[in-house]
Image (tube, rainbow, N blue to C red; front, side, top):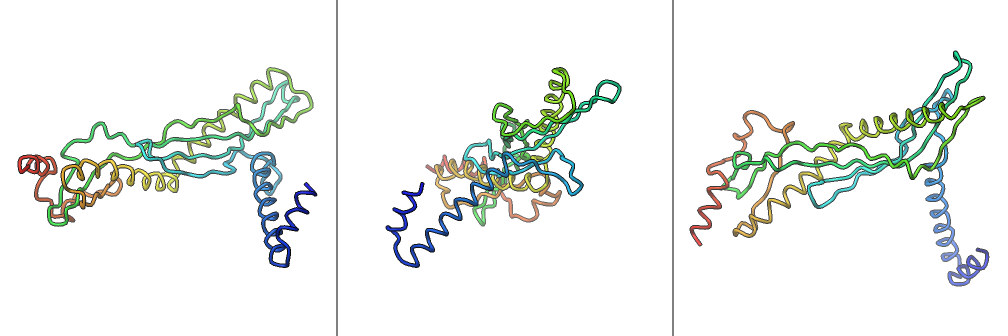
Length: 243
């Protein structure tokens, strides 16, 4: 390590080079500290109690109609009481989890597609994005802390079951939060628009715009926002005949 630092100092000789090297080392230490804090440090409330909570999460999009995936780390707590209240034990666990979001387009029909001839716009009235069951990866636990005067094997097993159930519930609640659902809908909107744009381009409508709406965004008078003159299936059929 020392040799590597000396070599780097020689390579970046001068005040600017040293400043850059210090900045680089500081950034690396910060990233390392954040990962250690995420995976190994128990998070506590102001009163010193530990709670089941999400430690870190990040949502990312995909190109298919598993439209996005939420990844994160969940801290879960559990308590077991035995021996008429004399034997109390607690467990704190940290483990990664993921939740996939899907749009089921299998039931989409021509009635769900509207064509605005003037602006060459396809309106897709899609079903809502739905989160799948959370996948909590217990095999990749980064922390397991058990406390108690005497923890029996049965108590330990009960603690693990409770901690897993709490982690599952917390991860799924986080995935259904308004913020995460809004992010997933944006990924879903982009994925659906891309899917619908391909056949439009193949039929000669490569410049057409695709607008994707979800149930919560639609109103009974939504069609009045557009000059929808012809169903899209008729437009495409006429296009084929013209060829």
